[in-house]
Length: 420
Image 1 (cartoon, helix red, strand yellow):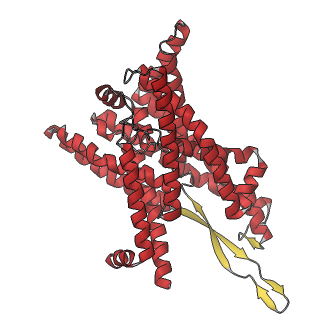
Image 2 (cartoon, rainbow, N blue to C red; image 1 turned 45 degrees about the vertical axis):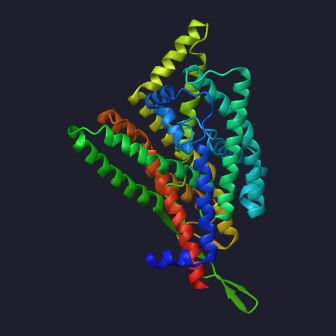
Image 3 (cartoon, helix red, strand yellow; image 1 turned 60 degrees about the horizontal axis):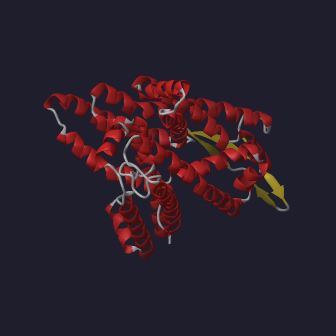
């Protein structure tokens, strides 16, 4: 390990990439500390303490939402735009062909469409969040101040999208994931300090149990994230002229959790939308609208109902997103074109049905795991009464996944330089 660390500092290119990364993260944290003018800090803190949903949303803003900074939307609009574009591949064959068959040029063009969708989504999300927070009495804006604040938070989201792209291009790791990771890690000392300040000797067994569960959760996230079902693949021998090709054996890795944290983002968006609409109509002149809004707010405010809805949505969206990103028929066709086959399975339709069956089985494990990870912190908070445990599971899932992904990229860079 120390030898690898020395190699990182000795290699000029790797050292430059890490310096770029630290510089970009410093800029991100600096902008996260600049608040939108006119905030009532006490009411803001009270609101986030009472809202589990906004606490989870704060994770994906990189921690910028909890103090209503100029980057309060974080990279959420860009993530939403990327998800929408991937869903469009199911509707428009041309987009699917661009993303899957046109190589790097096609993916760059696909990503460009995602960037173009981001500004209008940022405007919509910014307007919704500012309206909800204004109704909570956290700040009061004139029309001019409201428009100015909306432009500022939209520009902040686009700025973070640009920072994320720069990290991906000039540094190590996926830029968007690292920004979310940085926001979560930056909040950890504050959460730990709040827990210690509110420490009660009678809660010692609860705290010990929490840290044990956290260690088990980290280990489980690593196992599930790295877990895969290898499908053996054989390449038939082919003779061309005087030479023979093929005859090799490899395997097709099917990951247990192919969806990553996307199902949690999907579920969070679905749960956030009714609450935003209910808060918007909570002061309506119509009795029916006020009654329905009150019922929705009370339903989402209940720990157990909310946890049940959250678990079901995460479970369902895991299957849905896996179906969007994994196409057994396309894989079967590509294997058949390259002269490859799965032992004991006929090429073509039989292979696609076999792959579909395997993916369905292993996705069940991944969906169950993601659902448990999503609701585990809410259950712990309800049982222990410690508010700082509210977002632990989702945060751990993102942190461990980003660390594993970044570590693999660093390992690849080190292997390349060792080879050279």
